[in-house]
Length: 111
Length: 115
Image (cartoon, rainbow over all chains, first blue to last red; front, side):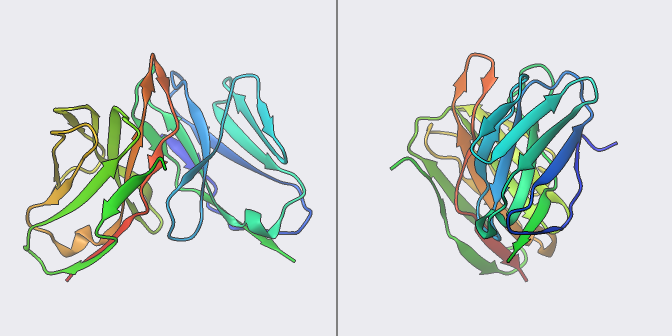
């Protein structure tokens, strides 16, 4: 099993739709979790951190399920500008500073 | 402006010709890292550094060298580039506070082609 797995997609949704991505991780001792956004051929940028209690930032909601070892990203009211690749990032075990990136999930929002 | 810079942004070279990709950050970050990104494989870590004179291998270090003589700079060296090192390379940095891992800031990327 890969350390961090994501469905590569693409997820093709209309404007205004709600879409959710999951990311599973294999190391139960992982402690830090993040979602990054990457536009085509550009550098990844932090979208949001994922906290144990879940967190929300505008239209974006991130949740962590430690029991099942996955994190999720929910995007409500999708905009054309949300089209991008979403990367799940998990640090390695026990406070390590070595992050592991998922391969990314591609989202295409169409009019 | 807080940023990570990489140079060159684009490079076409030939097999065996040594090259260096520079990376510099102005945020006084302790942690710096190099990644390569290939279609279908995602971001893979090449080398990382926790601080000056401290470097360690990532997942795909073969064929690469790094150095960290100054906190702000973390150059990536390809002593004898080969075509399988054709890729998009990103440098990144972050601060280290306690046991927390913080946001990584990425450079704009270097697209390398080895003929």
